[in-house]
Length: 351
Image (cartoon, helix red, strand yellow):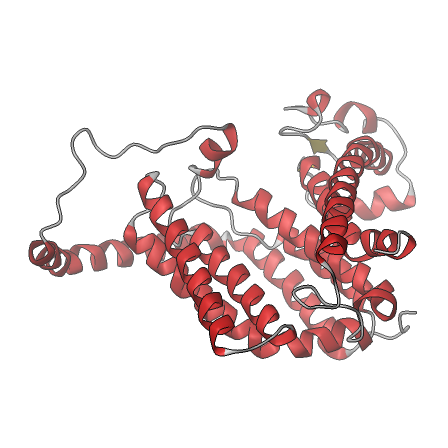
């Protein structure tokens, strides 16, 4: 059960984000900050170029042969990923964070000895190096992008290892966790800077926020059943290999099924809800009938507005991309299935 009152820090956090979103929209802060920063960055690159050239002369590493480097892309997703800005490398950053925390988890809950620690660090180091070299080879990033991604990843990993205990305590026993995270997730979908040129980064941002909300809401509901300190841990003798493989088979199948079903339901439900409330929407991908058209213009003209529609009328009258909501619900369902539905199936199947 969620407590009725809201702690002051939660109200302050949500109010601050709302204020930031309104101020950013009113004063066009993203464009102004970009206009201030770009000349400074350009000057630094020009000033520091001689030092870079000296380093190149010392190393004497040949440049790639002419014509210039070309990106190696085999799928549509890879071509879309190439539209992102390069600094820092998100692949290198995510690899450091995920593999580093997985190593921390394995060493914390598994058998610890000198060989295990050495092998674990060697595997993580090798994986990070392979990812970094691969991104350079594919022409997606420069060496500076990869090094920056690794550096940012190490900082984020160290920060998370410091605070994750406090975050766990808040999720397990805090007040208004689900409602606070729902409000925060909604605001984070608005509090996102507009890039100079279109990129798919916001889509990944929405997916991450949705998955995080689904995971937190699932853990909040089922912690004392499936996620407490006494449950069997992976990478430990408590879970035999066959049980682990069975969990992988059932869990991955369940997650993919929930992801598909939640997307299908959201594609049908969200446009209906938005049209009912008079919210103008378009779709960039998921709903072909709404591509490039404002769904509420023809339906709202000449009609008397209800109470909810009058409240929504105070917001800017622009068409919102319904794909954002669909993507959020899709990945929220995925996160929920990982922490709630799949463990429930494991329990019923004695896995």
